[in-house]
Image 1 (cartoon, rainbow, N blue to C red):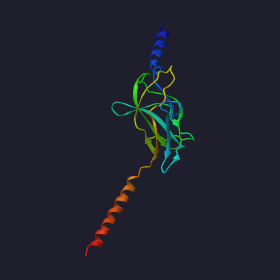
Image 2 (image 1 turned 30 degrees about the vertical axis):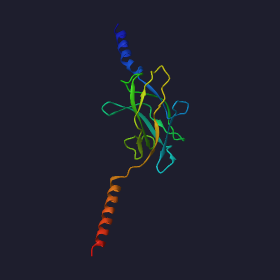
Image 3 (image 1 turned 60 degrees about the vertical axis):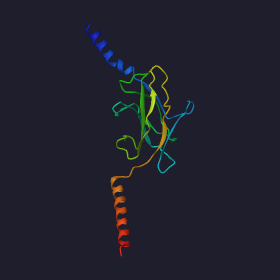
Image 4 (image 1 turned 120 degrees about the vertical axis):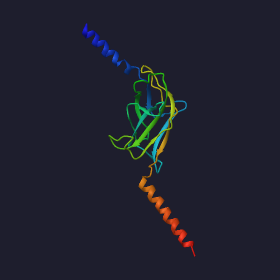
Length: 175
């Protein structure tokens, strides 16, 4: 009898994992209406981003992110085709969510937070599909160009240069 209860408790503890919503983590699906065509480039472009990663995330009500798995790899064409992405627990199939795609340039083991070149898509609304259904495509997702942001030191150097140039011009005008 004790084994039966342990089995029932173990099975009921794993039931939440079976109800998680899913999406098709493919950034190029030309047969959809409208088609999904989210290709990623690196600035100065148009140079395709082919050595990077992408991860879908659900934008929660408080603005924090709930990442989906797996992390996708950008292919030679600048697209991601990672198969079925599964939502974290608490997001069953049929739930309408706001999603973003975070893309970064880097090698194996790199993350969005540690990457120098990174971008985040605009939020798009999607309804997660049930695990037993065909995963829904990422309609509403658009591609982008990753642009490196200047460092604080570079911005400071530009500001100092402009300040010195302005001061130099003022000195020449005085009689």
